[in-house]
Length: 308
Ligand code: CP
Ligand code: NVA
Image (cartoon, rainbow, N blue to C red; front, side, top):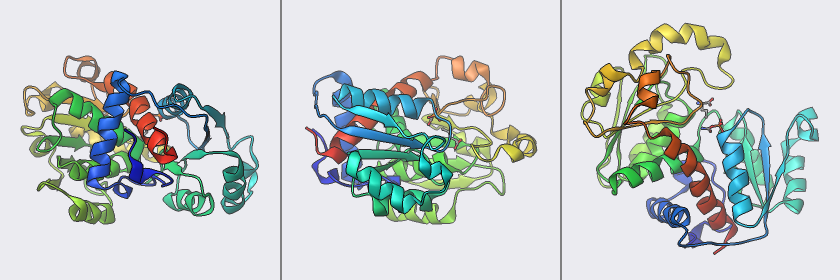
């Protein structure tokens, strides 16, 4: 069943969901994946992406098609917002045409401006601060692998950036312990960590460390992301030596639970944050994780649109 309390709302960050809404949304996504529910609608989704995307673009598009709706690609390079039309004007126009809007941009404040001026639901399809849709799919994947989320431990290795931020919030909201190992200077945003402490359920722990082995010890899932995100390409080279100890490889994997799974939001840079052997190995679940983007976002859109 779509999550009724989400109808008409935005998803700008994972903490916009309550613990019970997150649980219900993941259950709904699992039902959609199994095909036991088939909600339909004739709604129009707009995609306004200022950064490159494969998974998010295609999974959102396929999800709305499968719901019976349509998608419009509002590429900023060929729409006026890319030439300087204010976000506040663009948002008020788009909401007269569209039913729902997914935005991928740099500043969280720009996403918030879209949400402030558009009355339709606005979804964060990745900002520099958060990537909540990714984490819906990640938690769905962990739930599929282990049955239960509460009490699991996920270790994230690498940059305390958008993916790590949403992962931290999503984990504690689901009762999952989260350990994040990052090099000094690349830790998670303090405000996100504080928010995580506020919203944690079932005693979910947050551990931030510079020690990758301590983070991985006995963990049920190891997760990483690129060392230099979109917009940070200039610092990519200087990050490599600092991030090297955080690479997911067979050495690090030995410290995890023997049944641990490996996750990566993708795209991956093999030989940097993860070895080819690890991403292609038996413990990797990255392709299921990528597929789950579609099921999770279908559940999200059906809920925000009030479709059942
Ligand atoms: N994981 C993810 O968001 O991938 P894309 O950048 O390809 O959308
Ligand atoms: N942290 C990465 C995630 C890509 C899906 C980035 O922002 O580029």
